Amino acid sequence: MMRGAFIFSAALLSLSYAKPLLSRRYAVKETHAVPLEFSRVGEAPANHLLRLQIGVKQGQFDVLEKHLWEISDPDHSRYGQHLSLAEIHDLVKPTDESTDLVREWLHEHVSPEHIESSPAGDFFTFTLPVGKIEEMLQTNYSVYQHEDGSKIVRTHEWSLPLHLHEHITAVQPTTAFIRTVPQAKTYMTASGKGEHPRGPPSYEGKPTVDKVCDTGAVTPLCLRTLYGTVDYKPKVPGRNQVGLANYLGELNNRSDASIYLKNYRPEAISGAYTFKQISIANGTLQQTPDTPAQLRAGTGIEGALDVQTILGVSWPTPLLAWSTGGDPPFTPDADNPTVDNEPYLTWVNYVLQQDFVPQVISNSYEDNEQTVPYSYAKVVCSQFAQLSARGVSILFGSGDGGVEGVQPGGSCKSNVDGRTQFTPLFPSSCPYVTSIGATVNFKPEVAAYDPRNGFSTGGGFSNYFPRPAWQASAVEGYLHTLGDEFEGLYNRSGRAYPDLAVYGVNYTIIWNGSLIRVDGTSAATPTAAGIFALLNDALIARGKPSLGFLNPWLYKKGKKAFVDVTSGSAIGCNTTGFVAGKGWDPVTGFGTPRFERLLEAVGL
Ligand SMILES: *[C@@H]1O[C@H](CO)[C@@H](O)[C@H](O)[C@H]1NC(C)=O
Ligand SMILES: *[C@@H]1O[C@H](CO)[C@@H](O)[C@H](O)[C@H]1NC(C)=O
Ligand SMILES: *[C@@H]1O[C@H](CO)[C@@H](O)[C@H](O)[C@H]1NC(C)=O
Ligand SMILES: *[C@@H]1O[C@H](CO)[C@@H](O)[C@H](O)[C@H]1NC(C)=O
Ligand SMILES: *[C@@H]1O[C@H](CO)[C@@H](O)[C@H](O)[C@H]1NC(C)=O
Ligand SMILES: *[C@@H]1O[C@H](CO)[C@@H](O)[C@H](O)[C@H]1NC(C)=O
Ligand SMILES: *[C@@H]1O[C@H](CO)[C@@H](O)[C@H](O)[C@H]1NC(C)=O
Image 1 (spheres, rainbow, N blue to C red):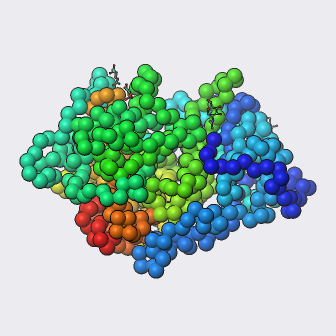
Image 2: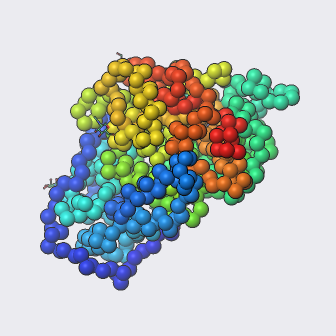
Image 3: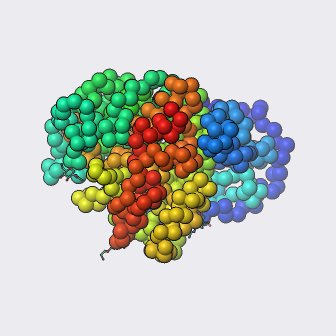
């Protein structure tokens, strides 16, 4: 259950726009091609429970967007004047007409006390068995099986009463075949066992990259030295915080984090037991040993990488870790139906209701954009815009499969017509998040590729979101150099990503009590979050606002603080993929950050 949500009572209802006779005519609202990796294996059991989220058209989203551009543009007089929770609620609150019409329809199917409303009233949430939802949406749900054997209950099409089409923006879970893939890659030894933890190399004098960095074992001391935060002492921990999102049963084990910090950042060891954990929609906070099945699945590797990296880089900045449940693999069990929800929307809607939100949030999960229905991507992206307008920087890894999708081994085919294409990712394709690519090697850093596990840093162009103005000149410059190479494989007019990059190969992480090495944009993203958290610390200590939505600043001023990465590529689909070059590119963005230059770029 989402905390902070309130349940509205029948007494609040005013049905002044009720048009009961109109409500009987249905028409298809959305059709979404079932991803090629899924096949239908049967009808959905009528008693399977879904936690349905209904998005109601936000009253003045265009005004909110205009505010967001102004407060994020470093040359605008309103730069940094983030909006408050109440101001945002006023802007996204649906019109009375939308609210009344949607409620009237809902009450024909669900009793009012079972419906939760978001504080702004732009989302209604309730749990119902599939059989009832099928009546509401005039659809038939099915069980679909993924190539990996896991199952999910979804539909490829749903309908709404005609008069509600313009008032409802999205209903999920319906057509979203999201799997939320963690962007971390390991390679285990044949025994599947890790190594004994060992600390960083000993060195004398001031740390330098030559003394403390080893491409075979990357530690927080190396990252802090490389990016120049090693001497920075946080001044306002508490007022400044950093957040981390876990999905799909991923977990943050404190005991592993403490072994890591003891070896790699001893002064931070208390951080392992003091970071805050919050469960949303039954997300796991497990601190007991992994079960054999979890060990086989590597459960907790992503969570270990994220939490250990952030603490290693930005300690003593307090860390808040959310774990959102949902989207479980479907297990047919008539006696104990599991509740199935959509994790991003559940997470962002929870966070949006909080009075305090950490100023930087690290997210290491992505999906192939085409598995996400357009309506869902739009609604989630608009929720990210609200969080950005509050002064939060939302970071997502750009994916571990180069141009091939969320992981190596993608089909490189369109779900719609089977055409060969590069596969862009969501949420990186959402213009309101900052997408982080990965690098390898120190002198110089190049776009990350690891032949042993196929990890290749991701980049591409959205098919859903058009190119925003702030990146127009950077991206057009790249496209000009690219010419007609890869024509037809990507969308020239789409939002291009990543925006920047950070080191991402051979991080030494503690999992299940021993040392393993992990690659990924999932490694790069928490490091980037740690660096921006320290930059916010410096700003807040000087009485300035947090950076908030980074991209307009990054593409205008911030880019000067980055070292360009000019070789390597986003290998995938049996091609080199996009190639890194001089200036911005869809492989490493503007390159990797240097802290002293970031301080200068924000005027400190
Ligand atoms: C759902 O399935 C039933 C039984 O096969 C069929 O009669 C009905 O037309 C289907 N409804 C939709 C919306 O496809
Ligand atoms: C996990 O740790 C347990 C206890 O130390 C050990 O027996 C097991 O082999 C480890 N498994 C893996 C996959 O590391
Ligand atoms: C990563 O570490 C492994 C094991 O130490 C090493 O063999 C490999 O060369 C390293 N990768 C890079 C890019 O240095
Ligand atoms: C959370 O778990 C409890 C008990 O296992 C269950 O009753 C409840 O429906 C679950 N809630 C959600 C949102 O999954
Ligand atoms: C390319 O992107 C544009 C705008 O972002 C979109 O309207 C168009 O449908 C996309 N093309 C394809 C083939 O998806
Ligand atoms: C998590 O922590 C417990 C101790 O609290 C430890 O026994 C266990 O091995 C850890 N699990 C994993 C997967 O690391
Ligand atoms: C790449 O080439 C191999 C060998 O020809 C082929 O099996 C594979 O399907 C190709 N992959 C893609 C994504 O085209």
